[in-house]
Length: 267
Image 1 (tube, rainbow, N blue to C red):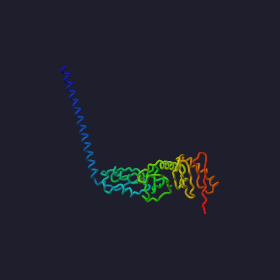
Image 2: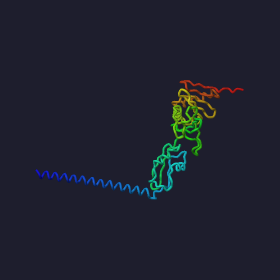
Image 3: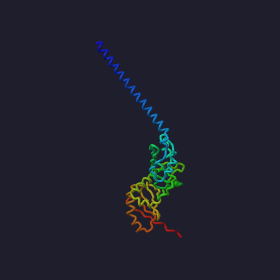
Image 4: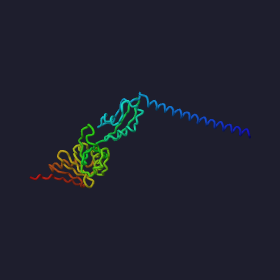
């Protein structure tokens, strides 16, 4: 009986000894890993081999590589492992035209920057002219070297002037409705949309399109853009045949089309 107890006690002590040995091994391994990581970080942080020589930029449409280099704050010769990438992203995304920026290291001596620019879809007149994106972000005029595109001017909105700031979205339901409709319209009939010079909101969730050239005004509901544009395409030849110089076409009434004539000039 005593022999069995002695054997059990020795077996338990051997198990505890093995457990302690395992913990010691793990501790040494962890300590060694930490030391290796520290040595690697020290090496990467000090070695001139990793000095920045080039910035690779992808995704540019309106901005130039020089615009990105200046905004990034990166300097030639900086150790790429000592650069705070989050700070670089923050500086880049502070630019009005940059929606998102992704920055990664490319050892031994490069930084890669992937840019997603804001996409301008129209101009907007709010007492001052801005570019505007599909989600209502204001863009400053003349902030890039790319000339203005043939885009419509959105006007007739009641937006507080003191709330306007480039790079910030305008919170206005009428504007967002116009932008949604315009996005659908450009996908449905890009050729027709090239001839739209202006867009204005109207009461009853409707909009007014001002056509380039003859100044024809098209009034229609701000929904089902593809269907509305097909209807306009179908009706336009008949309108011009019956009314040589129409002032407006009104398609806001179900199953009806109202054509307005231009007022005769007096005198």
